[in-house]
Image (tube, rainbow, N blue to C red):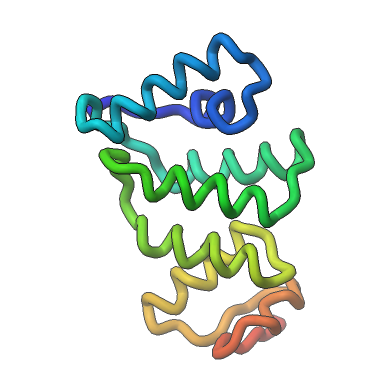
Length: 133
């Protein structure tokens, strides 16, 4: 197993550097074919989303499609895959950033139904109750 850093995913998704993108595409094909096992973390996914939003100015719908494709690639291992897939879905549906979507889904899996926050977008996520300190 080999760790996969954010920049490799970004080269593959954006093709902003075609030579590197081709090599990254080959790496993903090896994973799909079972010749390579790759590992990523939640923070890698968060960084991919942030970079696609802020640096590349991609629309949410395109980001969601890209990230779902990465998360569903065979032989890419990561903890919390189900949480991430649910969070990316929530991020795509609501006016909420990915980190807060991830936190909302994490709260739900832990049985937490309230959050102290000044971020009013938590009001959009039932059954969460937003509280202000």
